[in-house]
Length: 250
Image (tube, rainbow, N blue to C red; front, side, top):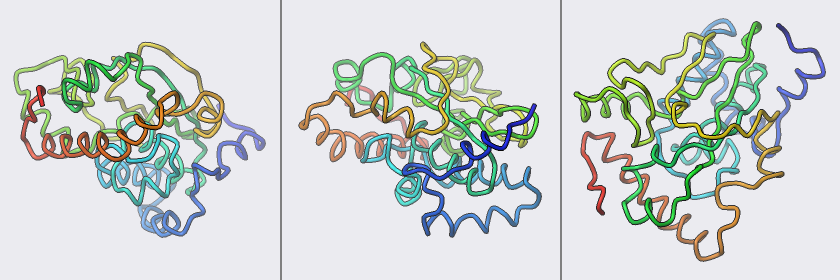
């Protein structure tokens, strides 16, 4: 399997969202390149986004640029995939984006009960990036949850097997492994996917055509999400990372 030159150009080009030519992302790339060959660089990019960009909720929409995600230092499925895609393209690794709708149960716990039950529609927008390894497209969904957060989940739910909630959906949390070998797939939420929305060359293509997570919200709800709700969610995710269990009723 291979991509042709035209496809390479599509899967390697910068965009408004995948702005890997920005100074801040250019500053990161040299540290990834010293990891070794291109396979090692792919892995380095993946681990950088997984563990340096903590699971959290950006104040902007899902369609913020990769450089903004880097600046925020936090992200979730859609925004962390954006940054990973930008880094991969900056390393000359072709990548594309796959969008879905996912069961809102994945967000249970992170969202306070009232918001979860009354303001979150089922079929939450979800995306992962797929990197071309030379032989296949590798699915990199596992980048969403940082290792410290995942370790905390394993400690907080030691008796659980199947886990759905707190940003995780997997058949056995005790055995889940989101490390990447540079070739295969990684997953952390795919068991809760309810609808496949298709593969897109860039996140820009999807958001331009269908809108982002704030599409359809009125100005009041947009303001509330950006300035209040996103901060609440990020604080709750951080408490969970530190081994605390935020009360779901709050």
